[in-house]
Image 1 (cartoon, one colour):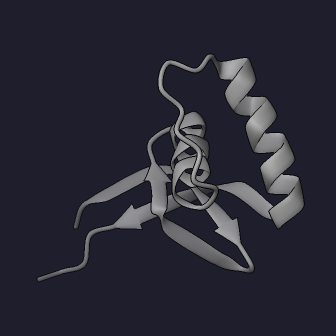
Image 2 (image 1 turned 45 degrees about the horizontal axis):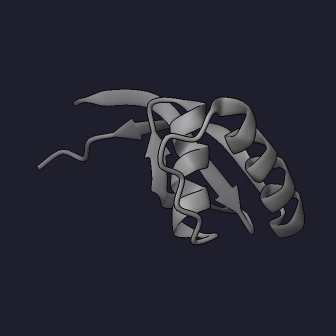
Length: 73
């Protein structure tokens, strides 16, 4: 069995699988792109955090730690 820890965005009690990533920053960026339609090329961390704070507050989203477990085949 293979296991990896990372982060994802939880919204309405569900983990958004499109946001799973090894870092909090990447999970937030993934969500801002997929859920909010923002394009974030070469944006500094403080700007990403400001976008995240505003959008996540409006939509009730949270960045949470996750563990991904590869299913047995």
